[in-house]
Image (cartoon, rainbow, N blue to C red; front, side):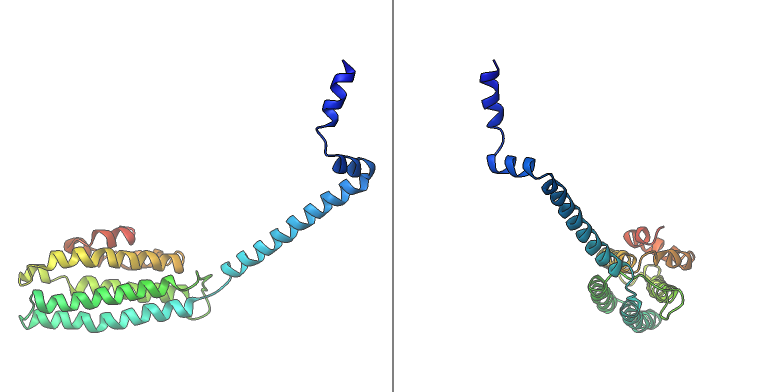
Length: 212
């Protein structure tokens, strides 16, 4: 029986590997140490890269993007209010302003998506709160500027315009919270009153993005 089994067992090993490892116990130790050392180097490299991503403060770039959007709202918002005050609000005139908003929000989303996630700062300007406050102004201006259009009844196509703008605004809002983590916490609080206008105008996706 032994004469049959031993040759088969022997064939399970590659001669070179079998002889080198068994004849040199130190080889096993050195092999294991090399593996551990290699894994350690990889772990340190990965941790270093992760640390860079987590400690980069990109608030300045984020703030610039949000400021640009806010500047657009400070132009479009008053224009819409003037159109309503002058009784010149229509699908055409309001439609032009809604298109301007769509373009501005889309551009902001793309800009924010191209900025590295920020570690943020509560002391170095622009701070996390600075960004949130500016974006709150953007949201409030949008909500209040559009608030009288439905009641005036001069823009029958307004609901369709909202259907187009709503997901665009929601996407920008969510992207801000990705690039500037937790920035929507303060935005939500500052929109507690103005959110009622979004409800009336049926900006459902934007409301959801804001946490309402």
